[in-house]
Length: 344
Ligand SMILES: [Zn+2]
Image (cartoon, rainbow, N blue to C red):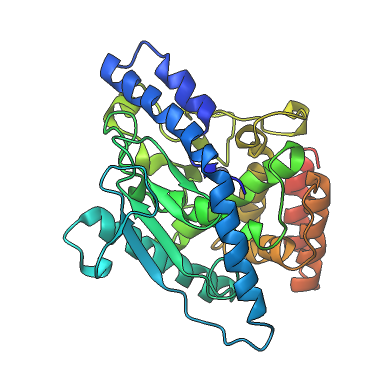
């Protein structure tokens, strides 16, 4: 089982050594790094629990009644024990962070259900668990295979991680990928894995704001940047339309000429991210209406492919465009051209 952190370790390390930031801000970033190691140590335990949960779900068999997913919020009270203590009635909680975690999870369930006819992230009504106030000033959010965890951010470089819907959209889509394509986290499959999380995270954000492809800014993580990061000219974590954007905390390659095996999936994802943004913009309208349907079918409509290459995924979207929208030459062309532009 993987731990999928929203802010890549390399970004935390680089920022913690950037002397343009205050000493206290750099110390906060450094404190957020070793916690990642502690999380990894818990990985095997979490994995064992998930295996049991999944086998119980499977034993329900094909005739089992599909359940309505529950939306549960827990409070870590700045400790590191998961999931923490349950928050009663989070929809009306006095703590705005609890309320935000609840509301965004509910919206995410609604997004996958109404737009893609998917019952929660596993397709079978899996309950969503969110743990808030993890650690002290913790500069990250992560999906550990069975639940979401949010740090408060240090308030300087990053703000509270429940404050941006693309964070939860990104992280929970790792769960959808885990139950569909089952992509690995290395080489091209890893880049696709990260790319799908950005793509569906961005779509979720656009859907909540009811934006067209031209109104959307195509930025990832713009809502969690703190005042110190903004003062240094940073605008986001990644930019899907222009992955090489120098105002992104983590600029990426824009096409396959910048790809190499072994690179961080948070970097190689720039390639499939840009292909989706280009295709969606060329198709027009709202990203989830046509382009999103094509990408969703490519992700959820076929067999798992843990070592999938980017070219294979590109070809799946070409086939999906033709089968979902037969005779729609403009849409097929938009998808094909977008992938060719990034070298696929
Ligand atoms: Zn991710």
